[in-house]
Amino acid sequence: MTASLSLGWPAPAKLNLFLHINAQRSDGYHELQTLFQFVEHCDYLDFKVLETSELKLHSNMSAAVADSDNLILRAAKSLQQRTGCQLGAEIWLDKRLPMGGGLGGGSSDAATTLVALNQLWKTGLSATELCELGLKLGADVPVFVNGFSAFAEGVGEKLQNVEPSEPWYLVLVPQVHVSTAEVFQDPELPRDTPKLSLESLMNSPWKNDCQTLVAKRYPQVAKTLDWLLEYAPSRMTGTGACVFGQFEQEQQAKDVLAKLPASIKGFVAKGANKSPLMLRLAQC
Image (cartoon, rainbow, N blue to C red):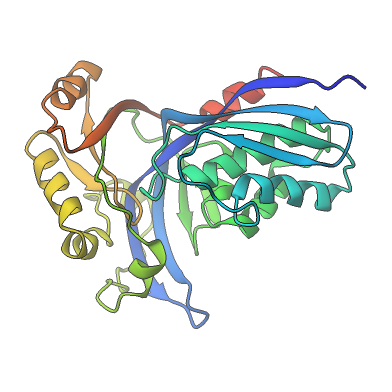
């Protein structure tokens, strides 16, 4: 068998268009309701199938992540173990999404690894089976495997495909790392937002229950959000630190990006209800 090279598998960012914390369960996990949408700004992964079961990862990430903690390698190994596949892979990661920003980059990388290697190794798992594998790696991984904008409930594992509008977003990246675990452990986090029907949520003002707390704990997030709110309806995604503003036209978003202070990084990207990963998979 000749080793085959498969290039350009996207791992897109996601935004939480709203995030409501409904309750904390006895096991410590939180019940939530959230709306995920992809944006066309991605990490990219290349894969070479190996005849041995070896897994090798090359990355342009400045901060090294131990192999035992790396979601890409854990995803590949879990697929091997689930299917008994004897093949391996050499993987190249072009990291473009900020780490720890609430954009789901690590989870998206893991999902792309599962979807791509399931195709390249011909292991034949269904999307549902891949989602089950992904959930063991992280609560957000199934959303990326599923590949469609989704309303999520439970701890984030109950998904229902939805089609919100696909505006342009300006996403700003404060230079601070927000710990998701610390946010969910904070006694000041609201945990009592009433559960609502999807129809009601889609027709209500959208908010993020973590935003007030994170802005209080991290002044850089508050400062960045205040700046962006001058130009567009804006919120934080996930537990932060990234914030996003919504625009009807690409040029409007680019005009605001051009005014950005040098101390803040950002990018413009279009919302996408169908993941770029699904479009890449369709090319196989």
